[in-house]
Image (cartoon, rainbow, N blue to C red):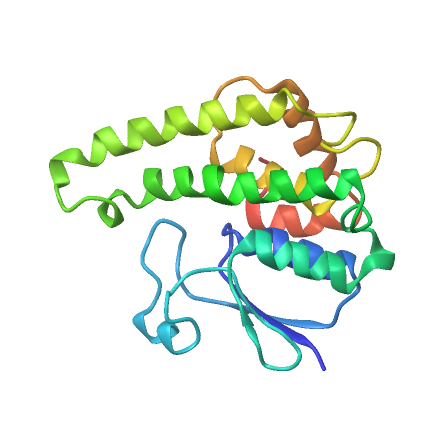
Length: 205
């Protein structure tokens, strides 16, 4: 039995694809014929009624959405692959904190910047929404930057939280200077397993 991952190039499913690959989990990747920043095909609602990516179908047919939830689930399913610190440890608590923080604050700000029409019906307010979203991204990334504990977010070892954060730096390419997070992004981009996936989604960014 294998997983099925729905995504499109350059979208948030990048980190889920990386996690599945690091876990050596069998999966089928279905890439939708759509570009980031544009609506998904209405027919995709049959797979995910909220019509969002990434969407992961588990081996038993269960549908999972919400990137941070998927990452936590995969890390628990494959503990020997060390996608995250061991459950129940202080390091795992930090892992949960920052993956959830990224989903709630970074991802939401990216969506407000890219899809302002989802958050207001007043088209005159789209530019203001984008501006506020960019400021929110800057503030959130600065907070994470201050909590980097080593060469990676949680210390000496790469986790899927690092891969997740690296993705946001690509999306927020005109943001504030965050040298520690940028160094993490570069390590993720050069990782022997994750690097080829990165290049397919983001090129040399």
